[in-house]
View 1 (cartoon, rainbow, N blue to C red):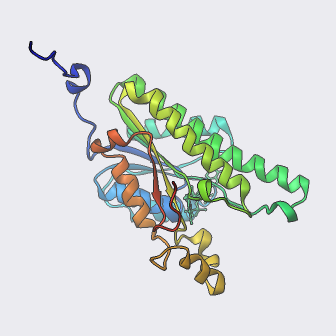
View 2 (cartoon, rainbow, N blue to C red):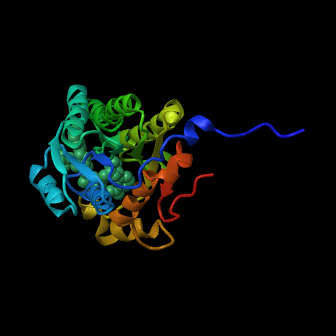
View 3 (cartoon, rainbow, N blue to C red):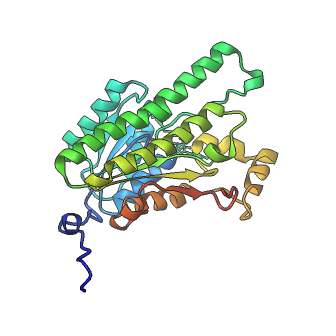
Length: 269
Ligand SMILES: NC(=O)c1ccc[n+]([C@@H]2O[C@H](COP(=O)([O-])OP(=O)(O)OC[C@H]3O[C@@H](n4cnc5c(N)ncnc54)[C@H](OP(=O)(O)O)[C@@H]3O)[C@@H](O)[C@H]2O)c1
């Protein structure tokens, strides 16, 4: 007896997610990894909404350095849910839609438990949760709802962290919120797959960005580089390349993944 047809007509008949010419919102692109992510998408022929929180001048420099045209600069304080929603609306208005959202913006300030008073501890946790977790959740919600309404699929890539798995003794709220970001991405991956929206996260180890440059000198720098058998930390472009791939048509099948990008410095089992 003949095998029943095993086609997947609904998905197969839809056009593939585009490889280039996408509308991309990158949060926290004033410098560091966000700037490298904005550049790699622009170099790919995508249009980028460069978001920043407070560093307008640096964000302007990111925008000015992008190849291609049609990119825009947008400001929002992502600790405020209303501003997060307005950011996605503004990106849609400026670019004509958002096909790819990269949740890169985050805070990471020290609050070692043994040395931090309770008021500072509470402030630190609130700030990390508001920006790293809730900012990511609200941008994702607003972008996903628009992608669903358009019916053209989409990609959401979260910047998580190795710290979610390895622990961050001086930054526990940072590690906890990055673990939550990974979990959020996995829930959204399942929820949004029927709408052809793939959601994934990357979990980088140390990256040589402005924010951590002061830690990469002297004995501490040596120790940090020694975490990897390569004896170095990542360049932002190495992380950005993975983010670009996770936004590709082929990455649909990687939806839900948390991709380790740490130079074999921490191997999860
Ligand atoms: N560097 C590393 O070693 C490393 C390792 C693993 C993961 N990561 C992750 O990679 C991402 C980028 O890190 P980075 O080192 O490039 O950090 P960064 O230079 O401090 O960049 C953080 C970005 O987030 C934005 N931001 C922070 N708070 C915000 C708020 N309340 N509202 C709006 N925007 C806000 C900043 O905007 P303004 O500057 O304009 O205020 C900035 O553009 C983060 O998610 C970080 O957790 C970094």
